[in-house]
Image (cartoon, rainbow, N blue to C red; front, side, top):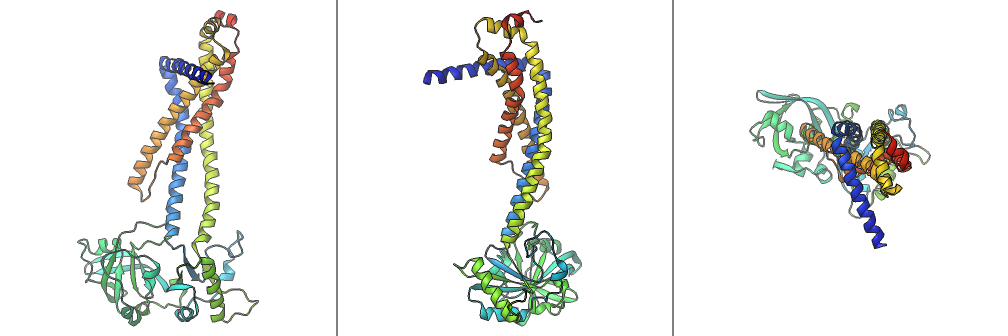
Length: 423
C-alpha cells in the first residue's frame, strides 16, 4: 500500500510539472483562462463575504438588545400568529404601555430583576451656545435603565434614584452628540437646550458605533422620564412608549415571559378568553426571522455566483479541449513510450485543477482587497473568513475537475498511432 501511495505521489508530481510547463508556455491563453474563473470566484465569495458581514452585524446588534430581556410594547416585532401577514389594524387599537402599569408589575413579578420605562422623541434639534445638532434622539427612561442596557460611560455618572424620581433636568449624551456640540470633549457640567428647556449634562457614553436595530447611544440624549413629561405627552403614539423587563439570574426568558404575561393580563383585567392587548417582544423573535432572511440571501448568492462560476467553467473546458488538440502528437509519443491512460488522464486533469485553483486564489486575493477597502470606508467589518477561503478553493478545484474531466478522458483514450500521425 505504501508503494502505491508513493507511486501516486510521483505520478501526481510529474503531472503537475507537465501541467505547469504547459501553462507557462501558453502564458496569454493561461491568463485569459484564469480571468473567467477569477471573476467567478471573486463574484461568489464577494457575495458570501458581504452576507456574512451583514449577518454578523445584525446578529450583534440584536444581541445588544439583551438575550434575557423582554420588551412590553403595543406593537409586536413579528406577526403574533407566526404567519406572513402583519395585521396592523388589530394592533393599532391596543392601549399604550403606561408607567403605572410598570410600577404595578414591579410589585407583582417575582422572576424579574429590573424594569425600565422607555419613550423616544425623535428628530430633535439640540443646542448649546452657538452650536447645534439636528436629528438627535431623546431617550426618556426610568431609573433602572442602566441595569438593563449597559452604558459604558466615558465621563461622568448615571442618574441617582432621587434624581430620576424627582425628574431633575439632567442628561447623559452620546459620543456623536458630544463631538457635535463640544469638540473639545468637555461636555460634563455644561448645558444643552431641548425644546426650550435647559438640561445639565452629567455623563457621556462611549462611542458604540452604528446599530442596524437603532440601539446605539451615539446620537442619543438620555433624560429621566419624569423630567420628559415637560417635553412631551408620554401617552402618545409618537413617542412609542414601552417598558423593558430583565430576568433575574437563573430565570429563563420563557419563565419570565409566562410570569409577565399573567401579570399584564391581571393588571389590564383581561378575561380568560380575551386576546392579549399587548406584545411581548424578545430577541429570539428577531433571530428566527433572521434565519429565514439569510437562508434566502444564501440561495440568491449561490444563484448569482453560480452563474459567474458557470461561465468560468465553460472557459476552462474550452481551453482544455484546445490544449488536448494542440498536444495530440505529444500524447501519442508518451503512449508509445509506455505511458498509461491514467497518467495522461491525470496530466490534463491536474492542469485544469491547477489552473482553476490559481485563478481562484487570485479571485480570493481581490475579495480580500475589496473587504479591506470596504471596512475602511463603511462602519462594517468585512472579513474574508477561513470558511469562505476554503469554500473558494474547493469550488475552484471542483470546477477544475468538472471542466477538465471530459478533455482529459478524450486525451487518455487516444490511439497512440493515430495521435502521433496527427498534425
